[in-house]
Image (cartoon, rainbow, N blue to C red; front, side, top):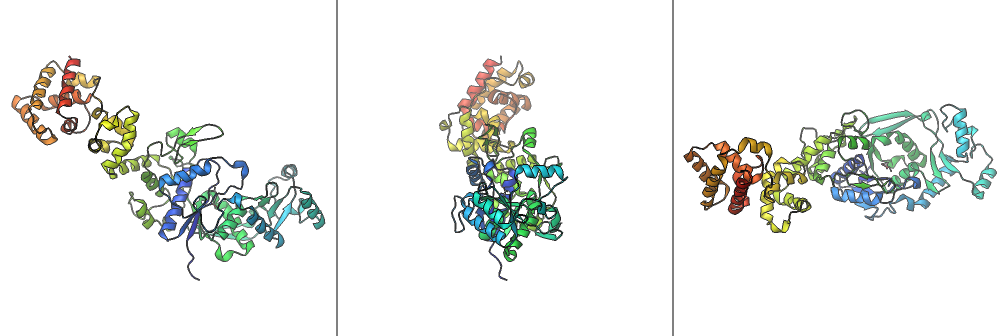
Length: 508
Ligand code: GLU
């Protein structure tokens, strides 16, 4: 048999913000598609109208745009297998529901919610299946004429899948191997509801995967329990030969490792579980996002890629292109992956270092503006040099402000404990002298200035540490920051001396 073209899909239900686990699922599908020269389809599974949330679809699309995960076809991308929004495919599903009814693989059931409740009370652990279906109100127990009459009258009904009991169903999973369950534990799942003329997730999902020629279904572990049912549906339609290969990805676990990662873990420990900030249209609640929290998309991608997969060695930093080359479902773990959000912060730090100073400077501009700095007063080369001096000290671009504010505003106050330690009765006189020395320097760049100042300190027999720390305190406002003469080079002679004079005046 000829190798099938790789076609995978990401098929979210638009029920709210996209959870970070969903982002990882989409990423793995993307990597797999790219690696195999295949297609990645974006399908919207919106057959459950009760759970529809306005804005969710747009939110999901914007998230992937930010992250650099590109789709080849689907909602908003077009393609030859559309429509890609399930609510626009009603007629297609109706046709396939009829196929199952006509072949006796499914049946019509009229049981009302009240009747089902009554049964649940009467029979402990009631399940609508081979053991109970013959005592229910459905087309297997009612005369055909009555069924036809009720349907014609517009009576509400559902279509249920008729699952044959006591059969081993095998799911051949690329990550988990042969997963076997007995069909008796499955219930006769509802496939279609006349009330809204829409199929349920299970039917729509299988029909679409088939019609869209999906070759691999890569999705979260939470869907593994549905997989046997899906296998039986493929069989009922006679589509076994083109059934997609399954791969169920490991769960994302709490940072501590026990139990599934939830939004509450993020709130509790202070990390986002959504790619972008999400404004819940119903509750008005705002949830933080990776983008707004200052993460670089490359860092988020790299971090997520390693939650459940590894390249087979201890390489950690990988670009999207490298991930495409290295990704391998065989190296995905079965066991859940702890959501080590601190690792995410570490990745962000690493990607800040890897990006050019120019790129980081561009990202720093809005931060400066937010702090009231007139960015236009500074050249790009000034901003770039500032970034080069401090970027190694931060995990997020916004933290550059704390490290670099003195490049933009002169200190107004001086750190008390540094003053106590570094500023004594002699200091003003020495600072005046030092200002005089600086005044006489021709080339104010870092190294030449440093040589002159150090030579002067030595000649005078001053204490190097005392002089330099007082100098720093005067110019920076506290005893921290990058190399002192890198700072003065950037500030320039005039500003440096101005700050020293001011410190002498204030710190009398
Ligand atoms: N609509 C499902 C979801 O929200 C799709 C599951 C699947 O990939 O089959 O994730």
